[in-house]
Structures are given as C-alpha cells and as structure tokens.
Length: 224
View 1: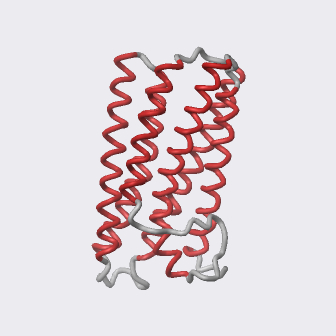
View 2: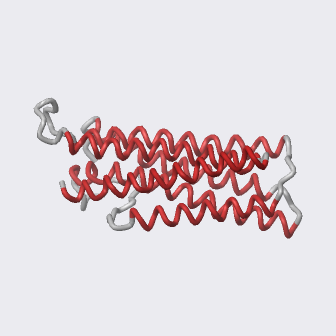
View 3: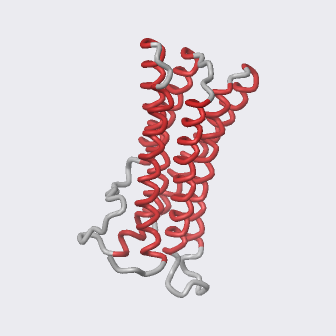
C-alpha cells in the first residue's frame, strides 16, 4: 500500500506538470496566434486527462482497499483505468495519423523556428515526467503473455504502464517532430513532417493495442 501511495503521488505530480504546461502553451498560442502551439497544448490536454484517470484509479483503489463493496478487492479499478487510458492512447495515435494525412492534401506554411522551440519544450517536460515516474520498474512486454509474471503482476503494473506509455508517446511525438522539422527546414522538403507523423501514430496505436489486450485479459479473467 505504501508503494501504491508513492505511485499515486508521482502520478499526481506528473498530472500537475502536464496541466501547467498545457495551459501555458494554449495561453501563449492564443496571444501569438500560433496554431502549432495551440495544437500541442490541446494534445497535452488529452494526456493530462488520461494521466488523471490513472491517478484517480490509484486513489480510489487505496481508499476502498478495506471496503466490503468489492468482492475481489480493488485491483481491477486500476486495470479498468488502464483499459480506458489505452483507448485514449489509441485515439491519440489515430488523430496524429489523420492530421498528418491532411497535411498531404492541404499543406500548411510552417514557422520552423517557433515549432522547433515548442517541440523541444514539450520534450523537456516529458523527459522530466519520465524521471519523476522512473522509480517504479516495469516490464513493457506490450501485448505479450509473460510466463514469468502471474496475473497479479499484470494487475499491479497495468495502471502504471498506461501512464508510462502516455508519457512515452509524448516523448516519441516530440522527438519525431523535432526530427521532421529539422529535416524540413534544412532540406526544404515539407513532406517529411506528415510522413514522420504517420510513423509516430502507427507506433502509438501498436502500444495502445498491446495494453488493451493485456487489460482485457485481466478484466475478463482470460488465461494467457
């Protein structure tokens, strides 16, 4: 229970950090009329929501740990939260792909210097979030049955895994965005941006699918 309280506090800290960054980006985006900054701010908002679900799952599973309301304990609260977060993660990947495809059809003028600064700020925030969550060791065997880990370990890790994958998704999109923007700026080839965006979306959807499979197995009591 003490370990769960630590994870709960770390998750809350990451949520606060994400929300502050989200509001700053949206506020600055409105002032500067920067659509890139606005888009990144709202994108971080979806992850703040998913991380908030993770935090609430830890909070309620700890608060009702001794309650007779749950026949088999409160572990599946965390699994249900991870399942919900995996859906948000998948939707994020789909939105990235749709937005990237739209840039092929309707290319937009990118202010590369501002966009690179935004991507770097996002990357720094996400790396800081990973360092905050780093104390908990997890095995990211996405979508695989691991014979060395029983069902209880899957239950324990799934909620944390969902939060960790959301942060990793942000790190991935930030790195890919920086790479795309640098290539576009110096090689003057704008299609690098949507191509790398589609690649990132596919990877995120794969992570989401693996987490979804893991959590469904626990929720439905399916054996590996």
